[in-house]
Image (cartoon, rainbow, N blue to C red):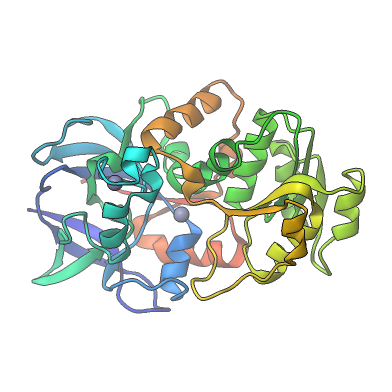
Length: 369
Ligand SMILES: [Zn+2]
Ligand SMILES: [Zn+2]
């Protein structure tokens, strides 16, 4: 058992509390991580504002980089001393979905993960004798955490913490949506709705795949410059209304081959259908409100338009994170430009407020003890 300082969500719409918790030792296939840095992502915000519901108290954070300090029984894929990127998409490796290579859909892990539990349906964090829940099997806003071994991807020491800490969720989800979910092929045209971290990752993946046209629709003009550096060829505002005609004009009046909708609300999905050509595909990449619905013109299906979802970019962390790091090492992927700055764990609420007010990609640092 060790003591760890962690940021705990105790009630909806309340600031996180910095607390000293107890962490039990890792059990079967689990590893103990000493955190180096943790990324802050919009899903952390969605847990705070109740957009998605979790058991509480809960240690937030679902991206990060750390060093393996200890391993439980049966751990074979990583070892003590490994520097690892943490991914919330851990998997059992042996269920219906894992056996089909669809580890991001792992059915065994999804249920306990949604309840704030580890794969064996228990918790390792304690506040006195009270159980504290895990967030998405990561809980990276803690000096130490316990994760499942398949949620760890060993990487070299050459990747700086500011890059590695923000890679595990939005970058994988965005790039995977292009490479895996859509299977985007060279020369295609694409529209991206929403210029947040996922949207920027999608734009970079499209550029790497040599898209012939990359259009970003984003109301905040302050994000346009960064989007152009990432590879966007046209940036258009939807502050007043969705620029349906402009997008069509940029694509021979037909519409794009693929629309990646990172906003994922009724209006954007409906408009995405209009801006996508016959036989084209709308990929819903954002995380929709659990109770929302999408209504689209049925006749569009007669034109062979497709509407598909993308969870974690259909990615497997062990297969896809090393590929993403290769693009970064070759200079083809700009991740420095994505980082908006860092805050120590004690100031995690300031980082959360910054993200809520301005967007951006922040990371949390830990003072070593
Ligand atoms: Zn996330
Ligand atoms: Zn599985």
